[in-house]
Length: 351
Image (tube, rainbow, N blue to C red; front, side):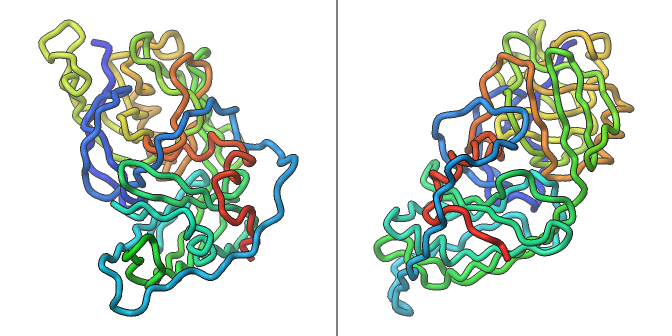
């Protein structure tokens, strides 16, 4: 059988408030689970270049932050606890954005500049002081704001967020509940370059090609999304069920089988995983339901090399482009100018 698909199994703490899908590769259906990433905006998607290395041409100067509006103690009718990812003490890949999610809350746009100014990011380590920017989005009643540099985080960077949000007004009668401080590390650079026209996955670790893996991606009816994604979760063995994309198990295309060394890329259910039933197609043709399949030995090796936040750059498919938000971390599919357009204060130093 030519199979590839997935219901969610478990979710890492590395990601903050995601709605994951109990679905197969390429499916759009979702159901709410426990915290994972954010549930970001449903703005128009954008076909990305292979990597976010475009140099800014006319970057606006950073704006001075106005003071955040504080509600008097005890006066808020509603308080919201912001959810933040990654969590303190975690080590993530170079593609992991810093995410703050106001779950179930629409944040007044006139208050966002003051809120953004209350989110102080500092970096140390081999990456040294950087510049980066926040970007606001909305989806399904949530408001989120993500921070990223212009290009992927330098390996060895330590990132600290000091979120001074206690009593900060989010909307009429609503405030954030408390201050938060998190610190996380950026591990080795792992960029997986998937070319589905050539049917290969090239693993670039710390700037050097570590392995070129023959793969098979989504077939004509279930094309793999093109663009930049990140590893959302390392789920190990996952039961993949064709019913989650509307295919009965007893149909010629049906399946209900375990797949090993599975790493999730999208909320809608695209994975990288071992797919021994597609072995004849590796390096030759795309036959899956949207996932990227490979041999057991290659999948086991890649799983051992990988962590949440590692980059997956997919080219060579005519599938839909990766969503900017709402289907995993598609942040890197925005050019730097587009990213800054969603910021209230613009590019900011992290010293």
